[in-house]
Length: 289
Ligand code: PAF
Image (cartoon, rainbow, N blue to C red; front, side, top):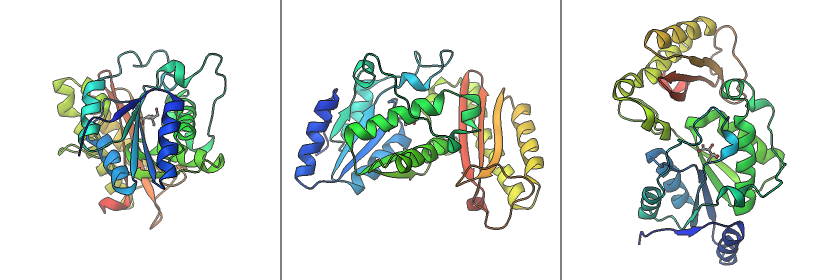
């Protein structure tokens, strides 16, 4: 029966719960989040509930992935609502460490992942992937799940996490889950809560313009030309600044020059501001053909 998940706030407490499940031969899934949960997060939790016997959802707004000028202080937080939402679908444990539990006094170790962190969000938020890689490594080592679930909306983040797990031999399978969208195409994000009414009306154009870029590239238009067209469209529609709109290899994130070869697993990536809200999205080129 759905109920409130058990709240665990310490590494030791989490390890005890997981060890007891393991003694019973149960499979454990971890869904790392920063709270302000929406249906995109709940899709990750449902996937874990389907795949695993036990599900831990971590809720930790990680200070090390925010630059000083970014929205760490104002990032939406609603613990009671989050617990209700994950409890209603059957989550076993909500892991909610405080910053001192996660980063002990004198903490100096960081994890940085070279290739997949370069370019795109890594270029405009240079601190970001090291903060994510460090906290996700810690969460995986604190919980030692069989599987951990991440949204494809943060596709570059997903590739960074897959790479660190491989490179550091962390024994967890990383599962990417498709982006959940509003009916008008806007990708769900906790930061959508920042959008003014007017900006909310404009926001779906990010995905609509990306789809047109994907169509152009799939139809043989040169990648650079399609990217320039897409960036201009975003700017004309009030996205300012446009951090990037780029077509890249969907597996390596290598830039694509020239036109797209048939069967190339390309994706369109974009990040742009509407007012103070930074929106990001990515779509595969092939799927829309
Ligand atoms: O995607 C997120 O919400 C965060 O970057 C993550 C993976 C929970 C790490 O803090």
